[in-house]
Image (cartoon, rainbow, N blue to C red; front, side):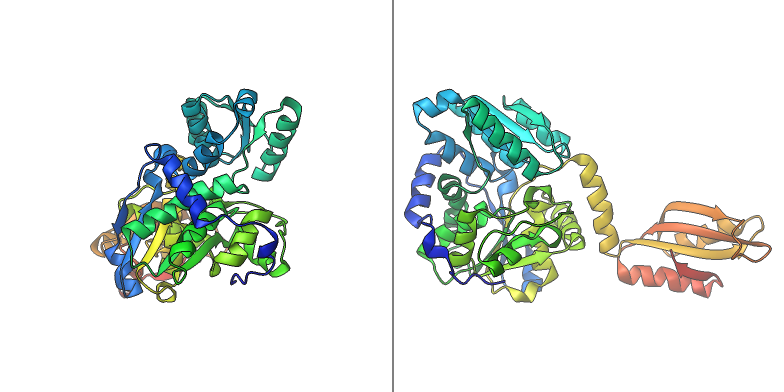
Amino acid sequence: MTGNGAGAAEVPLVSGADVEAAAALLSGVVRHTPLEHSRTLAERAGGPVWLKCENLQRAGSFKIRGAYTRLSRLTAEERARGVVAASAGNHAQGVALAASMLGIRATVFMPESAPLPKVAATRGYGADARLGGHSLTDALVSAAEHAERTGAVLIHPFDHPDVIAGQGTVGLEILEQCPDVATVLVCTGGGGLVSGIAAAIKSRRPGVRVVGVQAEAAAAFPGSLAAGHPVALPAMATMADGIAVGAPGELTLAHVQALVDEVRTVSEEDLSRALLFCLERAKLVVEPAGAAAVAAVLADPAAFPPPVVAVVSGGNIDPVLLLKVVQHGMAAAGRYLRLRLRVPDRPGSLAGVLTELADAGANVLEVEHERTATRLDLGEVEVFVVLETRGPEHAEEVVAALGRAGYSVTAG
């Protein structure tokens, strides 16, 4: 889906000067995060690929940039009323940290499914974190009601010019760190980050290609761009909670229409592989949403003219989810192999199977016996094994070795 500028003129866009003003405001507040080269991705893309490590930003994501910009521009009277926000986690932490730095009372509504470490971190920064509802949409409704009831200022996670300008400072840093960049890939949920980065980059280097990347199970922009107005998704189901946003805002949609060259989607398997890649090859702890840009490069490396910068937007991942995603990523990468074998029901048969597997270099993670299934012949046992391999080629070698040993093997 390509931005075409339709309807964009109706909404004033954030300018390069706005982003530069935000950068001056954020000087000494946020970290200039590193740009790390990825040799592996460069080999696949046919040119330099860099990772912009916003997972190493204060509070673990880019969100402090927009939150601090927005809060710092509140009037004294607005600050006295306090602020309220809704977030699955990263915006919550950004608002909580910014509010604590500026001495503002903050209340944050989070979905019941919000990762516990994000809830704990939000409270650790001094905000009143309240759980309720099943989605970010529910949390936004609760936050709006709280603002109406108490007079607190609602700090929208993406659809405000100050927030977009603050997030856009990532783009200014990219241009400083990689002056010859040709393509910038940005994870995209509500669109605040990609809008700001596009505003910053297009004002200085209009020829640079800016690509938004959404989880295909939570991709609201393609339909909204086609319709010319925000269109809410009927449902979402993605591990990437940080970009699970049901609809873009009017402001972010206008920016994407006018400034973003393309919006792509990536699958859950793509996200899992990217997260595993970041851990193993880049040595970066990244949440699924933060790995979306890397996932796009891994899925289709030839699609993006290098030098490429992939924005790694956040690293706030629940360790329980990390374990699940690593396992999912290993399966998607062909590192897990599930097999069923029929063997004679006699002593030593299982030991023989395990010996063959050991000789083939496979690591056994799980093993089960089945004796009573009607599909088995008398005197047969079915053995189900889950194996860790070195990849698809090694998995084929393991299956071939079992076949040569005389075992009947089927995929599990």
